Length: 411
Image (cartoon, rainbow, N blue to C red; front, side, top):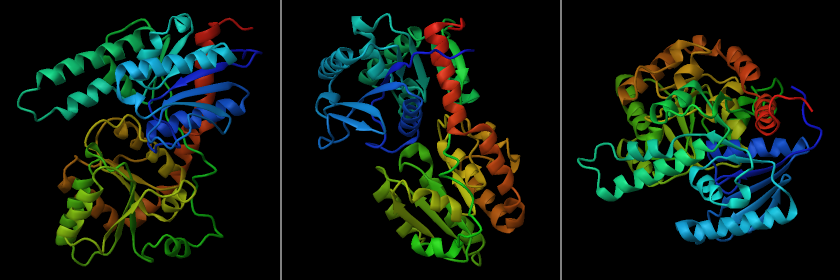
């Protein structure tokens, strides 16, 4: 398809976005927008402040950020009013060619703006808000009436975003099928475009780099197997199961020596610290907290195995692509898209389940067969190069934008 001569003006919608918050969906939004700007497109990002000290308007890597105040973002009516003001401000500068929705709440409120009704819309499906709320309610004897009402409102907002989008973008076959379980819409095109990774930023250890010197810089143990996980410290990430798995592994193999580094921040920090202390694992497990963006690739580079212990909803997992790009094998639970991604390298990388016992068994196999996993490093890197470069992702995304705006006719 021929690309249009004019550069596009894109309105990108996300509740939070990098660098305000760190996470897969937020990072993906930023990485795509940044590269669209380098291709000459105009990108206006409407997002919400995660704290009041963030500026209301800012240029980051050419992306024009318009942030709704923290207070306004916490109520439906004030958020709608704030969104309307942001849209009006942007429309005074540029007419919008396409709306790229990453969040159903923000997307729904923009759908209420008559000035944007005729603008083509594409929805980027990171996960289902409705799905996540349902999972959070699992185990509740009876779902409260208030939660039932909230779920229905969420479903309506998501449905509206899906119904009025010309194309829905999914990160994996799993995400697409999960969507179809809840919404039987035939109107929008359903397109799979995976997440990406910066292949220059994430790469295997270079000959001139010293593994132990980097580990010393990161305050990690030298000359022992290093297992890594990079996750938000939240419930569905399965991190407590991972701690319990380490306990089981060491009880069965008291002679084994290794270190587990957990990188990230979140609401479970204190609980994890307490569990690690209770199980007497402080010498084996290290919680690093959130690390600077420029330092993160070093952790991948000097690790021997990445573990993804997710218990629910793994739509893609950018950390998997980052691990592969670093030549780092990933062991993951058979949840969401993890199965289809890890199968590209080796079926042995998939844990049998999500339980601590399953995780312990998989990590024990790694420790007892380090040479086998070391031989997978080259294939991991090749898989990332073939499937997950950001340039390839943005090529595909840009093509869908063009189709949505101009159809299949060349200009």
